Amino acid sequence: MAKSATGKWVSRVGSSGGGKAYKKTRPGNYYGILVLIVVLGLLATVWARYEYQHPGSKAKGAPPAIGTTWYAALSIQACGKTLPFLSTDSTVKGGLTVQPADVIKVSPVSAADSGANATLAQFANEYPGLIVSSSELAVPAAGGKTNAATTFHNGNSCPATSKYAGQTGKVEFAYWTSFGQKSATITTNPGAIKFSEYLRVTMAFEPTGVTPTAPAQTTVNDMVKAGSAGTSTTTTTAVTTTVVPTTTTPSSSSSTTTTAKATTTTAKG
Image (cartoon, rainbow, N blue to C red; front, side):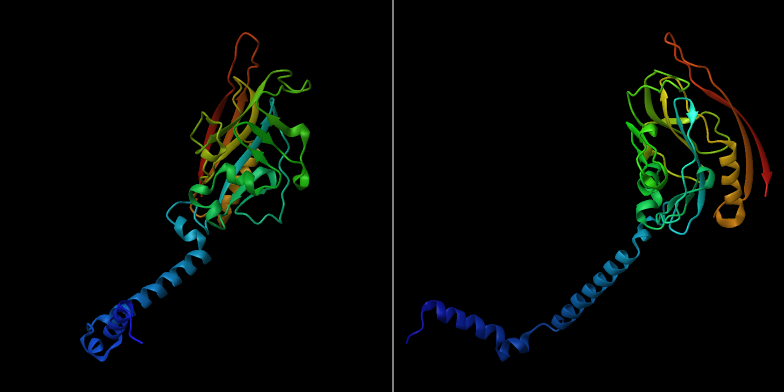
């Protein structure tokens, strides 16, 4: 049977690709290119595996890196009252954990809580039951159980038994990045507060005009003690700070902020 035009064309293509004449004229670097492709493929596979097993490698340039150990001081306040310390939980596996007296240990274990991701919002994500946002502050009971008495939303009124009974409150966060900083930096975004060594931070629900106070001296002392014990990676100076809050209660005709006077004593370690 005569071959069709298409069949003849396929035959010619096949013979030109696989014939001895083609093999003799094949470029000399043909096999070199094949080897290069294989090598690049292997390198890409090895690198992808390394990145998967070491997720924190991308964050090495941004502190706190994996392997770093810092300490920070925390306070939680609502309607003019400092709430009890958070309960410690040894089963928490994250890199941002709470120690006794509300000292936060910052010791990243993955990319999720290292570098730019080591924020107050991430700490809340890793602490069972704790919720912080621009509109909500929910402090759990022991074991991460929801506690209605310590759950606050913007627009809620302070309890009748509180210092600012009946006044409308809002969630905000105050922080101090150094002992020399006298006035708190205030924000409503917990994700904007990145941990630094010896950071002091307060999560609060207060009426407009009331500035949250810094963490208690007990917490600050324990934070500095933990850092100077040799586990903090960059500390060479121990600092003791005394904070004396002065509070004026806001009235219906005016609003007043709470200020804090601080005296600082520095002891070289």
